[in-house]
Structures are given as C-alpha cells and as structure tokens.
Length: 201
View 1 (tube, rainbow, N blue to C red):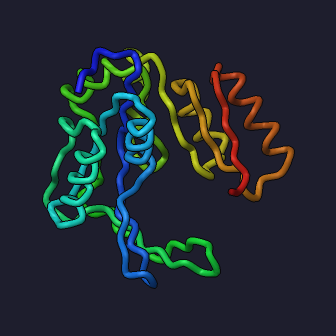
View 2: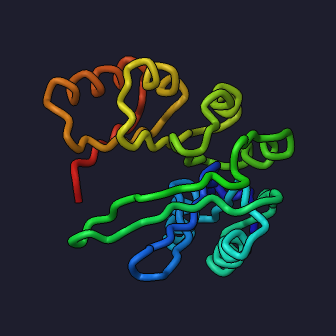
View 3: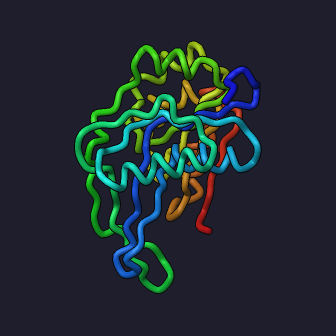
C-alpha cells in the first residue's frame, strides 16, 4: 500500500475484541482500529499502528485488518492475551460487564512509528489509546490529528489534549447546555478546526 497519497489515514492505538456474552460471539473493534477499517472501505489508504496479543483473538484482529486492506506493517505483537471487553445486550442496548487490557498497555510509539506516521495526512486516536503524552511530537510532523474523547469532558484533560487536535469528537449523552457551551468555547480557544458532538444514536 502506498503511503505517498494525500488520502492517507492511520489509526493509532486501541483495538479490542468485544465478547458478546449472551450471544457467544466475538467481534474485533476499537476506536482507532475501526477508523482505519471504515476509512479503507470508503477508498482511503489506511494503516493501523497498535499492539495485539499472542492469543487467537489477537491473531483474528491481524487477519481481519489484512482482509480489509489495512496496512499492518507497524502492527506489534506482544506476549499475552489480546485486549477484550465483555458485553451483554440488555433490551437492545450494550452493557459492558468486564474487560482486560491484556498485552496492550503500556503502549508507546517508537522512532519507526513516528517515521511511518509522518507520511499520513490524518491520524485518528482516542482516549483509549494512551498516546496523550506523545501528541506534541505527532503534531509537529502531521497535517491533522483526529481524537475521540468519548464521554471524557474534564476541563483539565481537554485543555491538555485539544491544543494538538484538528478534529475533536465528544459524546454529549447526559450533558447540559452549559457544559456544551463550555466545551465549544474551549475547542474554539485551542483552534480546533472541526468539533463533532454526538448525543445518542
């Protein structure tokens, strides 16, 4: 896969296997991984930089990424189980009932990762990836950083991360108008180009 195209997005960080307990089924996922897969389906050149475990779930994630056409040249394999979450479907809604970070943490980008990512137009990462302290260096060489904050709205955390973010995504479930106004102002102060706030499905 060429990384010279301007239409390159790399997912950085989290992957997870969702184990649906009452269905006895497992699905690969994770914020950064999903971004790489779905953008590839839309026709972009994409890659994934992250860590998988040595169990069958880690192998499954590797196989799925390859099948989807996502570049996995910077995928790392670490001894231990893959990160997973246990999920129950209750009246059609997902409820997370257990999790294990497995071989994922601690996750840190190395020099070869930085070199690889410098060729991307956009990287997408999230609160689940653990790369906050490496965002300043990423921002020095990347055109754009996309970051999913999920439901993490603490002002101190947002102020720590937003200065390096071009596209910010937050979940507003249960938030009031005052909080919405405050986060919009904070994003504006830190020159975030695009702020996406979701509120339920």
